[in-house]
Image (cartoon, rainbow, N blue to C red):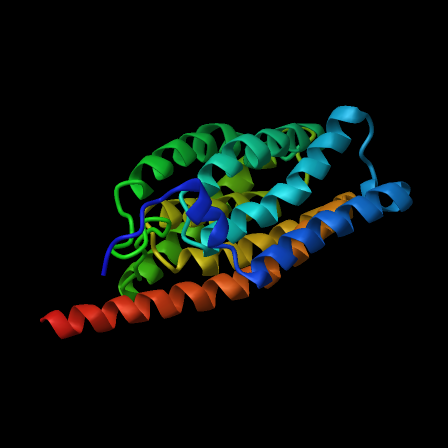
Length: 247
């Protein structure tokens, strides 16, 4: 089979009706709620910068996650410019210092590294896709243990910082998020499970801070996480079957 070249036109054509409807629904719902229910939706946001950051993040997070489910390297570009920068502004405002430090020291550098690594592993048949794989059980267990240790230690340290809020929730959200980032960089499908936990933790943080506009993001991402889990599972299963045939 002739390998498809990764052109912008072929990338746009790769979007399915579900994916287009999904993105349109997120944008429309965000616009409607922000316009007609600004006080309820924006909560404690004050000022153009925070409001703009919230809206941009709300729309871009589902877009980024959808690109991940599509195994597209462009998710890292969206994440760097349209998610991490607005996220940093929001975290500093609300005193989520662990998440803010994670954005600067981890997410921004890893976005660049991940893009370069994914670019080296295109799918054999469709270069718009990136090859992905699965972890071994013992590797999964090791990651879970590391998350709990990191979350507990950082949670203890955050309690020493004046103005820090939701310290353990903040710490564990950062720990699971970092695990997700590393697994994503290495193209492991288990990153979806880490992302599922991260999304739930952020959902609780958004509710506790009154940032109801971001609930649109969390709910949309929960839906797409299930979609991504299934899509990556089917892909890795197909690749495993191909590998078995060649042996």
